[in-house]
Length: 296
Image (cartoon, rainbow, N blue to C red):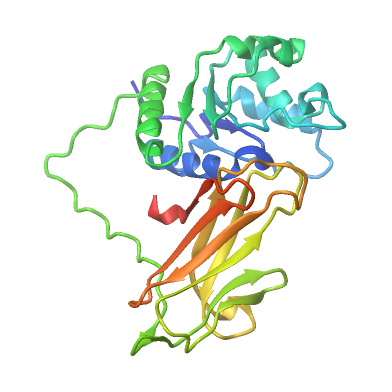
């Protein structure tokens, strides 16, 4: 039994496939195993460095690799799998772990299924036989992650945290997003951040309550699997000068070429000023998950 060394757990994933749920998973694993134990991004590779060697060295230091696999994990490049590219970062991560016989735990997210061996390059086909599990949307997310944590504790020979002698005080719940109101009207506008530290007005100040406003959003990149909406309160044209109500993540829609997914996002404010955000796919009317990370 013992504690984990730095970067013992590596999260292998594609940003355009599973960035939102991987971010939540990273936060939960870090809270369980300690700061610095979970490595998530290879974006910090120094310029001019051989990235294949850099990734291989990082994998050599870890004790387990978690492969987060969503619907677009195989990727596409001209109709072929991105894994066919020997320079693909995800391929290099998995290849290095397989060659070093480092345990790999596939986590299937966003309704994905395990790719069959024939869909993988020869060097990755053993991955199809690694035992994994599913991470679902809320309300199943927390229970699924607890199951993953228990499995990692067994795999890494880490003793579960001992029960405290006395229950620790529960942390204060996050402050729900709300606007200031008076006599059933808004005292400040509901806005969202757009590029260049600017804002787009969604619901203007002085509007009567309750009120809802729907806006259509789409993606900025091909195969993007989530969108982030920074919601603010205030009337300054600069986003940074207004009060943040939180960054809402919308997930669960089918990815495609940039600009193709059409998502109806509804911003609602009740008589008390409480703000809620909901989303559906514009064509199918499928209800999507819109959440603030601090609320999970």
